[in-house]
Length: 137
Ligand code: FES
Image 1: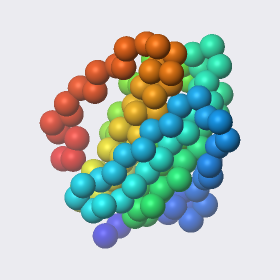
Image 2: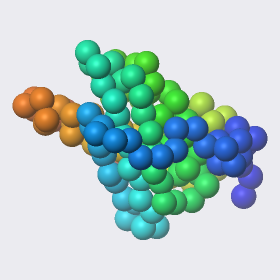
Image 3: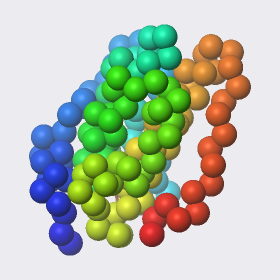
Image 4: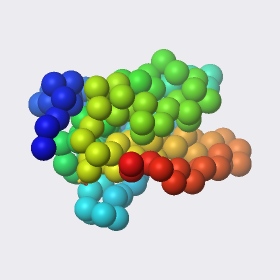
């Protein structure tokens, strides 16, 4: 299987790894296909993600996706971050092998869960996850 150089870079040297104390939102998701787990932590100020961290127990593609996804959402509004798809994460990594696309879905779902965790803490309705039928190509 061929990973892009960008994937290898983020896998060997992931950005934003670690736990966050008192995060404003946390999302934990698991991949039923492989049992891998990803947790995303968000620091949010005035609806802007000022910091993001992750802990991922998973394959190289999942770790690279978490690293890239947390990079992408930093500085974004919650609305912008919600719209970041797994495909956008995979593209930013210069592509993932087709059998590894589902690993990037963890990152999209983790961000969504963390944003909804924050919304619930604020007493807001959770945003709807739209079914992404063609997520895994
Ligand atoms: Fe499990 Fe990639 S194989 S997330």
